[in-house]
Image (cartoon, rainbow, N blue to C red; front, side, top):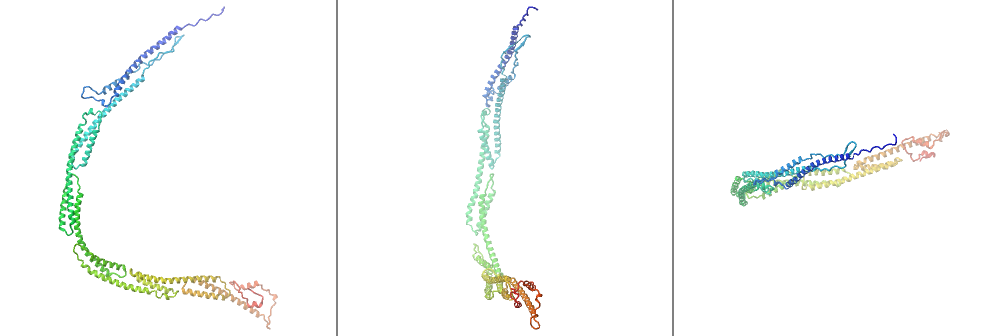
Length: 623
């Protein structure tokens, strides 16, 4: 190519096509909207009509009550609105059930393509709102009104049933009460009272019973119920009148029983046990009245216990009077028998009794005196004679006197013996235990004889014996004290001798005398408890004396040996001849003492005296 390049051709213009396509979109959308809105408007219009009808029905039903469901039988028109309202609600419910949207909400097209071009719309047509929610609400409201109407109808039916049930129950109860009334007698007070209470309850229930539809069902009220109530009330009144008349008859008879008892009470008070004929007549009258009361009968309960108690009291009083007479006769007979038996018993007791017990004698005396008092003090309205008691009573008194005399003599003798029992006590030595115990034995023997007796003077004699024995016991106590003192002396002497040191046989002489003197006292007072100590002291002295005698014998033997040795030293010329002392070892003082001790191993101490041989030698000195 030559010369330069050419420009490209311009793009095609699709504006007309695009506008046509947009108008087509808008026309299609508007057609859908018009069709839907027509159906929705028809739906809403039908729903509005239903709402208006429902509002009218709601107003009508809201003004109803249980009294509204009533068809007056006096008119040809049916005034009961229930059926018409129920039909209207059913029709409305059916209409609402068939009312619905035949079209669904349309979808609008906002974009379309024509090949090389496309078109769109930014707005869509508006749609009418179909009130489907309102429809559901109206369906619920219709159901609610139907329930409300049915509830009122049920309440009406229930109220009718309540009224009829009350009427039927009252009639049934009253008819049953009327039947029961015909079966009652004047004795059935409890049943009459219950029937009267039931009748009163029935009247109250009838009077208090109310209902808003009472005049519709029973315009004249419960007339049948009232008639039955009046009939029962009249029958009860007649039955109570009959009962009152019978009660009066029972009361009159009971009063006659009181009158009988009162009239005869004073008569019995004037009778005595001697009025036997009057007592018999009164008993016959009482028996007759009791038979009359036993034969009394009535349909009503009656109790003549109090009245018959008064008559029984009369009979008891009369019986007591008869019993009193018999008791008095028995008392006289028993008294005579008892006095005689007692007199014989007292006589036997006195004749077989003993003199030893003062209490028994006093009891016997009491019995005799009591019997005398009882016999002399006996009295009665009836005659009596106790002469048979005198003989055994006199014998008893004589026997009692004899027992007292014997007792006095015996006690006199025992008292004399007791007073003389301690006469020799003053002359008995203090150490003579046997003599003292002999005096106690004498008192004991008297006490043994006295023990057979009790009471009266026995106490005084016993006190004398006790004083006697106490005096002897004082002497025995003194003897015991003396023996104890001797025991102490023996203990002290034994201890002193055991602590004393004896050097020569002469040292034991005085202690032996002291021991012997004490032994003499111990043996004199028979102080046995001191014998061990005095024997111990004697053994101590004997042991020391034997030891000292052995020591003296040893000393004498040594003196003799020394003398013989000295004499053997003299020669024929009479001049002492001594050997060669240089050839002899001299004894030391210790050796010499050992030589002396060997003579007697039991010697504990050397004598303090110096032997003549030692004095002559002038060499040895011990001490």
